[in-house]
Image (cartoon, rainbow over all chains, first blue to last red; front, side):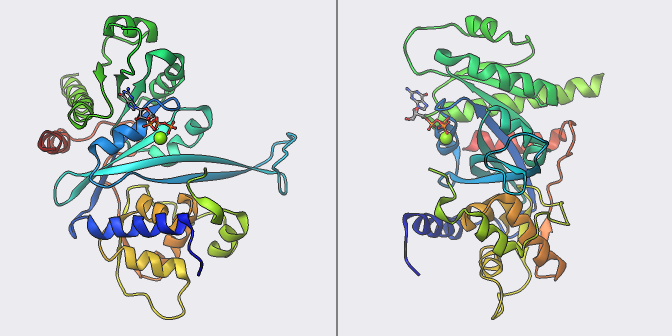
Length: 209
Length: 117
Ligand SMILES: Nc1nc2c(ncn2[C@@H]2O[C@H](COP(=O)(O)OP(=O)(O)OP(=O)(O)O)[C@@H](O)[C@H]2O)c(=O)[nH]1
Ligand SMILES: [Mg+2]
């Protein structure tokens, strides 16, 4: 069999799995999704906190064409493909948390239920140079009733206060907004902690409701 | 570049799944942990062999998908075959699948682990 860069990558993925296997007793997988526009630092954040090198894969969904002119259409079908990457954090001997980095573009939300049903919560990564990239993601998360926090990944340039960002995003007061540097492990860890604390607060609200 | 590389063509997908496009189980979550219940046997389809090797330790569906460089939907079909013949078991996530909040105890465990990172 000839060797290609992709074969090597797959071998590396296998090695990784052998080097950092899950506990034999692992039986509960959890999900947190990091969404945001292109280049906002999703993969960087996953890498900062993951115990494995981020891996990537994709999901495809084939649909029968609905009378549209479909250039890709073999037998009138169209395929939606969404690529995402992921890393993981072992919580304890039974529980493992998977972190998914995914672009928040339209076709992604099409596959949300199929891929991310049961997700604990989401982090919306925003870049103040392209705030509008996050409007759609915030909208969709609200529509899905998915708890989330917003993390401002600071790429430098013009300074913005969190208050200004909150206004620009029209975030409801209940949604935590934090600043972060996705390249920094401690900072990325604090983002995840703010999300889990937020979930915790929501369950407490539920209990008293 | 596509993360799946040059093998990601419809012919290959057709071949590995025997032409089926839908998993009958449908129950495999991205983070369902797969555990091999036997060693690969001679004559098995190569993707099944890889899955059984990888799943000697519990391995999430999404990690199998990345290692095999196959879309998650295709891996689900392969897993259905293995599950139906008793070659693997599946440990499904225990979190509520609908917009419901997880148990506070579970959140506490996650919080503790994050603090330890
Ligand atoms: N200055 C600065 N650069 C960052 C930060 N986070 C990420 N970067 C850089 O921004 C670039 C893009 O980061 P990625 O993590 O690849 O972004 P992504 O969201 O995964 O990008 P796509 O998957 O292509 O949509 C990389 O070169 C990172 O090193 C940050 O907090 N500050
Ligand atoms: Mg990325």
